[in-house]
Image (cartoon, rainbow, N blue to C red):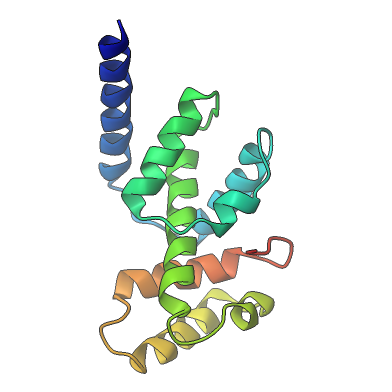
Length: 154
C-alpha cells in the first residue's frame, strides 16, 4: 500500500514537472507581475510568505515545491502556476547571482520601469561576464520590476 502511494506521488511530481517544462509561451514581464500577485494572493491562504521569500531554489526544486503545495490544496490555473514558477525562479536567481557582488537591499528599495531595470542589470552583468545569461538578465529585471514596495525579502 505504502509503495503505491509513493508511486502515485512520484507520478504526480513528474507530470507537474513535465507540464511546467512544456510551456511554449515565452515569458513576458507581465507574467512576473501576475506571478507575484498570484503567489501573494494564493500562498498566504495557508502560510506566511516569509519562508518562500527567503528560499533560494532551482527551477526543478520550485516545481517540486509547487507540486507539493498542489497536493495540499493549492489551486491555480496552469497559466498562474507557470507565472508563479517564473516569479519564484527569477527571485532565486536575483538572490543567488546578484548577492555575489553586492547586498540586495539597495536594488529592492528602488522602483524602476522594466527598460531601466534591464539596463541596470546588463550594466551589472557586464562587470562579471558570463555570470548572468541573457535569460537570467530578463528574469531578474522582470522580478525587480514586479517586486514593488510591499513585498520584502527577509
